[in-house]
Amino acid sequence: MLAIKNTRNGRNKDGDASQLKADLEALQAEKPKPPRVPQILLMDDPPESLAWKLVHQYPTAGVVSSEAGLIFSSHGMAKDSVIRNLSLLNTLWSGKGFPIGRRTTGSFTVRGVRLTVSLQVQMEIPQDFIEKSGLLARGGGF
Image 1 (cartoon, rainbow, N blue to C red):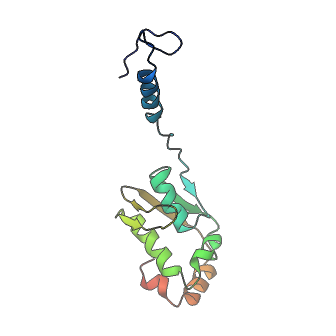
Image 2: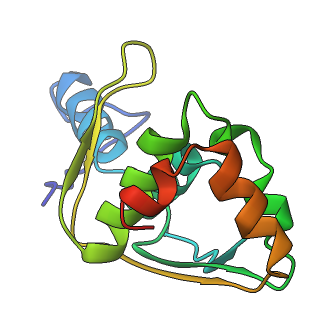
């Protein structure tokens, strides 16, 4: 709590403004954090973006799509990254913690979040996806 003194032109009765400046700096340091704004339904977010949003925006989300072909054909589902991305989705779905290391944007750990995945798709799309991923998705439990 800041002490308020009798002031005239920002100075106390001795003419010193240093305490007022210190009080102002303390007030500025106590700025509240911005509110966490929910964006609960997600569809075309890459897994890295999904993890970041769960930690920094709102701890609950659902990847919901009535046309999951968008998800199965996304950049994150290419053969070279499918295991990493599906593992992240499986870990988020299970509720376990997941550390994410970054050099430039800051590392963080995803924990205490909830994720629901609901994908609707015609049978040919996941069959094609499984064929292209070399059974990696199926073998990984997805």
